[in-house]
Length: 174
Image (cartoon, rainbow, N blue to C red; front, top):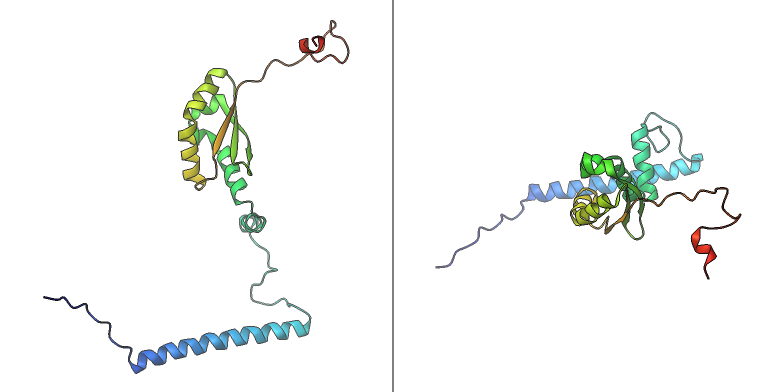
C-alpha cells in the first residue's frame, strides 16, 4: 500500500501568460522610474508637484520616529520610555523607593538608585525577574544587568573647624 501525494496541476497557457504579463509590467515600471529620474536630473533635481516626495512636511510623531530610526536610537529611546513607565514596570511601592538613573548602551546596564539600603537589597533580589520583564518589553538582550546603588552618604559640609582643602577624616592619615 503506497499513498500517493496529490500532484499540483501544471500551469496552463493562461497562467503562464499572466506571469509573463506581470513580469513585463514590473520591468516597464522600473524602466519608467529610471527614465523619470534621468529627466529630473536634467531639469536640475526634484521639482515640487502634486505628489508626495521626501521634502513634504511630516507629522511630528512620524518625523521623530524617522529620526530615531535614521540615527539608530531605537534602544536608548525604548529604555527612556521604560524610565518614564518605571512605576508600571516595577509597581508603585518599589517605584516610590527606587528610581532609574541611567542606561549604559555599550554594557547594557541599567543603574537604579534606592533611597535606603533595605530597598537596595530588595531590588537586588528582584533584579533577575526585572531584567526578564524589561527584556520581554524591550527586546531580548537589551538589559543584561541592573546595577543597584544604595543611598548616598551624607554631604561633606565645610564648617568652621575644617582646614581649607581638606577632604575629610582620611586626609590626615598616611
